[in-house]
Length: 162
Image (cartoon, rainbow, N blue to C red; front, side):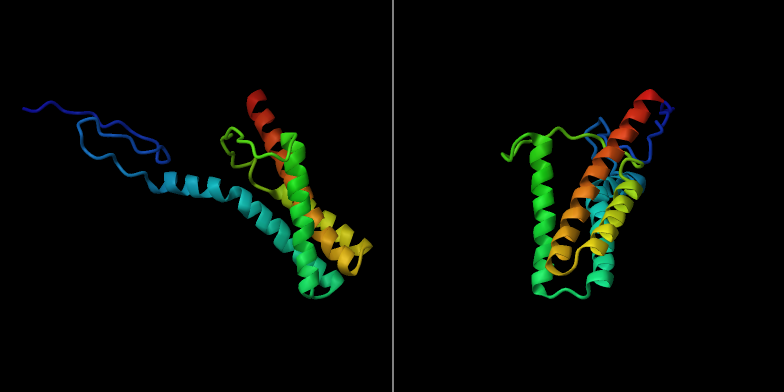
């Protein structure tokens, strides 16, 4: 009679591991693939909802943009992105940063996207025309990135203390 082998329970989101006898590894399960998808989309998702909502608010207040307005929005976003990246790294030279594991609540973007939308709403009520579109891109990007970093920092600290 063959000895019985106890099957080891594996978390549904754990990565696949080799079978140990030369057999191919079990493919990752649905939960693992979903966790990877959500984690990799977290940053782009948060920025998309921040900028998309910001454009909707700006269009209501500033009117539909022409090409120049869209280019100014893009320029404001790029300036905020580069400026904050340089501040965070202490330089504009490219530098590799260590990966930090993403957290669900750290990437929920409620605070960061909400603050970005509120900032754009305020900017669009203060500025019109070209200045409004430039400031919309800058405010949406800048406030989202700072808010996202603050949100992730707060969640990380809460996890360490709790």
